[in-house]
Length: 127
Image 1 (cartoon, rainbow, N blue to C red):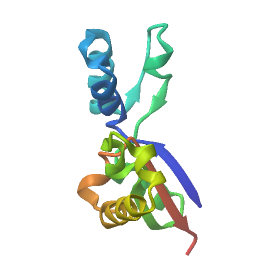
Image 2 (image 1 turned 90 degrees about the horizontal axis):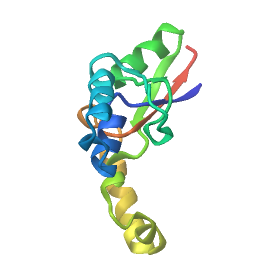
Image 3 (image 1 turned 120 degrees about the vertical axis):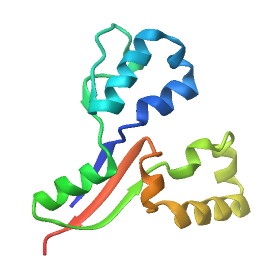
Image 4 (image 1 turned 135 degrees about the vertical axis):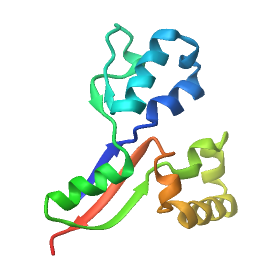
């Protein structure tokens, strides 16, 4: 089984990157996201996303276990690569791409960093 989820901290990351946190309405949405995982956008602003549940990494792990699967991997999809300002250009240069992928591989499953990715990926297997 493979499943993807949105990190509890995705709106914080997006708000910092896109300047949305300057708006008090968006900041209130983010506060609820971080506290409860319930992302609710009562505005008409589609760039602020839709109604969704945002997971903590360990919540996602628990849901997979509760469904009867053994968790084989839980990683942050973007990992630290989201912070690379010229990511597309970096991926086009073979030497830079190799270095980037090696860096991601070293930390993608590090528990203390998984939630810093906007999206999570979990792989489970039935015992």
